[in-house]
Length: 164
Image 1: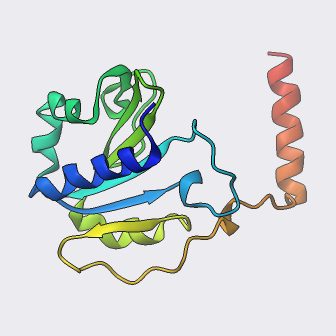
Image 2 (image 1 turned 45 degrees about the vertical axis):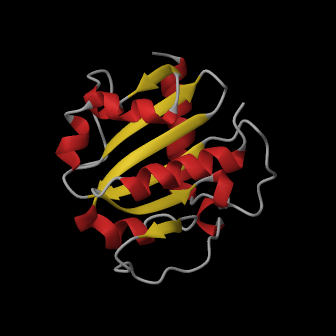
């Protein structure tokens, strides 16, 4: 299994060498200081890019990340409608056991990207155009007591699903 340092070096070197990639961000458990590290954590990476279509039109470009056991591109799948708008994701499981979820984000969405997840960290900003973002926090993922209405709806959904 490639080490965390090897994966991070690869992610950053690919971005640095490709002029279309302007920024690299990461979020998820690897940026959460409250989550213990383990070798099976995935890498939730975002490339903020110019000309996203050129990536999508060349599906082999991701071969640079290594030999894959399986790849999923949810935005190309019919079973579940895509939910990322103009973004495109590659969920890659490699033969060495590493797992990278790489999302391409149009550079025009840089401001939205920076603030949509409290665990986002910026790893590379080639143009120094990103807004300053706060240190990562998992606060938005803390369990909260549901409202009475949400609790009632959840119970109703459980019993409805149980009998249909």
